[in-house]
Image (cartoon, rainbow, N blue to C red; front, top):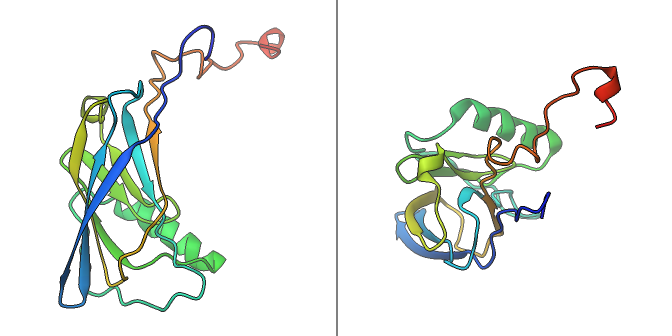
Amino acid sequence: NVQGRELPTLQSVGVSAKVTLAGDIFTYNYIVSNPPTNNGSIWIIHIDALKPSGGIELNGEGLVNGSCYLQRSSDFSLQTLRDRGTPAVPMGITAPSNWLCDLGSLSGWGSSDAPFLMLPGQSLGGFQITSRGLPGIRNFKAEPFLDPIDDADLYPSPPTDEADTER
């Protein structure tokens, strides 16, 4: 609660998955549900794509990213992970229409604009990952959308002069 206004929250977000195998590539199709009891719209969905400690090296050949894929930010993030010695599992990623996707330390999907947020009571499919990794439970996190215009008290303007720095 900020200045008498309730912040958007997300609880009990649901994820269902259907896994198929073609050759040696698994395809994970996810449907995400935002319960009607939430007061926040889903803006970003992160999925843990880090290689587990002691995990085997997987081949990334033939794994394709969708047209929504953010190539440059993903390349930078994946290289940073490799430099730190914490590589990601090789995978391809795609998103539903009007959503974007990337890989790296914050792998996942994000709404491309406010009209495409997942509102309370809505479900959305089309979140897809391909990998040679076996099915397993991964951590995920859904983040609510905070509008910087409507929530101006969360994003205060910078000080206007030295006397204003205490604000």
